[in-house]
Image (tube, rainbow, N blue to C red; front, side, top):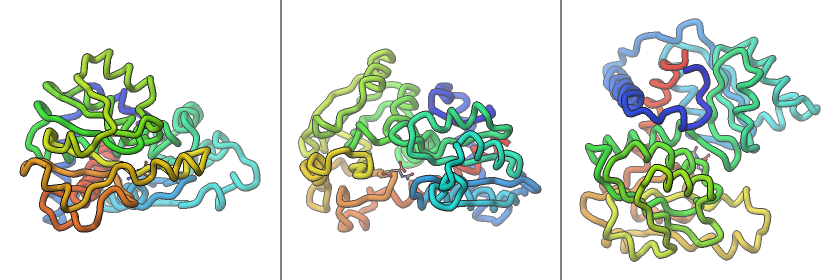
Length: 304
Ligand code: NCD
């Protein structure tokens, strides 16, 4: 594998298992502070044209823990030559001459693919607008496996902004690898999953139900995956204000969830999860964020 652009590249259970085993191994080695310097004399460039906390820091920490080095711009739209009118393609050609791998986040769908066409080094898609976010989906599914102890036979609710949520789009592909799966797609109608992804579910004969009623389905799920309403991707402020607080959970609602169920979220959360949920052992979202470090180490090891 050279570039990581979409989770469609990962539709292979053997490959997925290999990545998850590698992530678990890195976690073990990290606890003993014994990570081998597999990225020695390699440089990771993180080129982020959109805000990020977890994705950028966990990729950079992963590279550093593996003995690599990092060059970085966290606000490439302002601090790179994009400000002077340079095209993404030209920037990638140049940065690709300095680094061994480029982690790219950009507001346009398809930007990672465009970058990959001209890049001399691997491109890792860290989010292309409302398109995909493959490394997040890999760590999401890794978290499900780690928390539930299985990759098959579970019910998952994907709730929130299914229209613009790139982590959801990427996860949809990966879920096709799970057997005996049931999905609830929970969103206001305006934020429904785009047709291309719904068709993918149909094509893979995945059992899914569309609803806008989160409370009703809570007792039936093993995994509740909440997402942020992606305010920055709305063309109408009015629509954002009508939908912004429609899907939220708090300590009281959590009582309706199964004892064995988990709550995950790619973060950042805005109001979807009340902080009174955080101390509940079923709140897995901070463990999930930590898992990102190890899954990204496994992915850097894979592409480099
Ligand atoms: C997500 C993203 O950037 O798509 N964040 C992340 O990488 N963990 C989710 C979001 O911004 O809502």
